[in-house]
Image 1 (cartoon, one colour):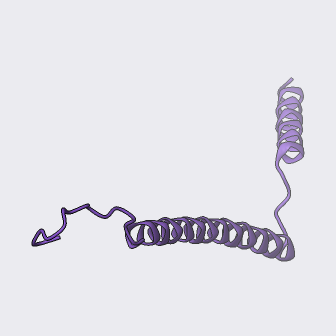
Image 2 (cartoon, rainbow, N blue to C red; image 1 turned 180 degrees about the vertical axis):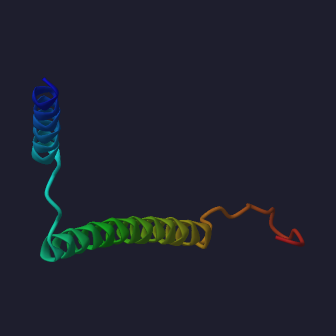
Length: 90
């Protein structure tokens, strides 16, 4: 009887370890880790590039707005006050 219980326990432990081994993912190889690192770096570079492009676009819009303001602020005025003939200071 003791042998049967011991055999059953051994069998249950063996089955449990086999089930655990089947659910556990295999370790990644060095080349798989390198590929993941490269992909991660590429994604990060794309994010940085996108941010840099957005900053450049914003800077260009600000420059255009400043140029427009300068253009319209420095335009010669077409308004000329009419002074009576002989008035001083016109």
